[in-house]
Amino acid sequence: MSMRRTVVLKLGLLVTVCACLPGGIASARSSGPGEVARIEAQLASGKVSCLSVIQARLDRIARLDGSLHAVVALNPTARDEARRIDALPRAARQELPLACAPLLVKDNIDVAGMPTTAGSVALAENYATADAEAVAKLKRAGGIVIAKTNMSEFAFNYRGRSSIRGQTTSPFAFAESAGGSSSGNAAALAAGFGVIALGTDTSGSARVPAALTGTVGLRPSFGAMPMGGVLPLSPTQDVIAPMCRHVADCMAIWSVLVDTGRAGPRHPLKGLRVGVLAAFMRAGGYAEAQALDRMRKAGAVVADMHLRDETVLTGKDAPSGETAMFASRSAFDFPAVMDAYLPSRAGVPQDAAALLAELRRLQAAGSTDPRVVEDVATFSANRAGAAADPRYRVNGAFRDRYVAERLDEAFDCEGGHPCVDVIVYPSVQAPSAPVDRGPETAGTHRLAAYSGRPAMAIPVGVVGTPQGPRPVSLELLGRRGDEARLMAIAAAWQARLPLHRMVRCESGQALVCLTAPARTATRR
Image (cartoon, rainbow, N blue to C red):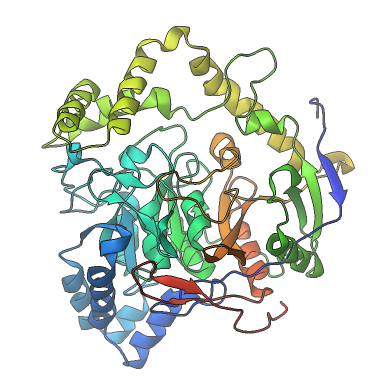
């Protein structure tokens, strides 16, 4: 390699941790066979019908979402789709890999016959005439869309607030944030409203809320899945992001969406080289340290590391010789993508300028968030001044090449250099955040978004806070196209942890609580 190698690896501290998932309606484990397989087994036994499975989720949403604000709209055809699966011959039903799996869909992804609002009242009449390509694949595999979910308006931030449904809250405490922008998916999964979900991830929009809610968020390699039927934010960063309560269920989604036939290794932790971004780990993070220690005991080589120029990569400092820091290109891309998207839709403003005018009208009527209007106005001004703006130049091919080179250094094993197979770091800096402010990320979510590499946020333990126990999550960053291996690592890691559980504790303050570990972890 011609580039300077300054990846620092120190063999040492590692971590062990517990991942404990919701037990509201189903099994509370994040590793193991998952809920898709459980529903399949129940249908095969004749103990339940698909209609009863779907009806139970719809009833739970109707009863409990008033405090959560996770759901935008229920699918009016969900029961009919369940009856269709019940009517199938048993052999035909067994051919469906996602038979009767309750599916949640973020409200910037098309579901035929339902609005695609991106959380904005300005797009309330944006009815989809066809399913997004990813939705269609999951439905053909037997998945049933039960609801569209709330999100940060236009996916702009991590606050999880929209003018369509208001503020999404955490199921652990309504005064806390569920992150964003895929806030509705994460909160709804943790609350037991669904089993699998489709979100989007432009910079961290699936992984950040997954981290706060003890669920799983996968950002695939850039370009791994077609984006047809998705309302865009930044086409050079946008990906469809599977989200689930269990790693096994994300594996099931992935096999349907991509169908590569590639499986993860049988013993994914043995000999695995793991780099931990020490500068970003939570101070006093005992749960994380325990979890990493379990990974080491399973045969992985775990070491603290630093990436070259890591404060530049995460948007804290400008690159040498530049005045602009790395940031999402959505601040420049949004007007152009609206100009391309809106004319193809009915009942909506027909370009970015008309959208801004409509948002200003809605703001005057008190129907939308002034901060969203300000963001759209700022993005429009950015486009007009892009040619002279150093932020625009720096956050193009220069940024992507800069980030990719430094991550490639860490993963390059040629010539006997110290290298890693995965990099581990937190998606968020604290296990909880106030609902009106949202979480602090320290910019680690940018590593996958700017490099095109896959990353996966998974729960690994629980930490006590003044408000009660909260999930602790870590993110795994891998090689491009290595999603199957990443999920195999996550599943094997969690299988070695004494897992906490999420259980119902419905009150005026919360829907879900965390319990102590249910059993001693098995070794695999």
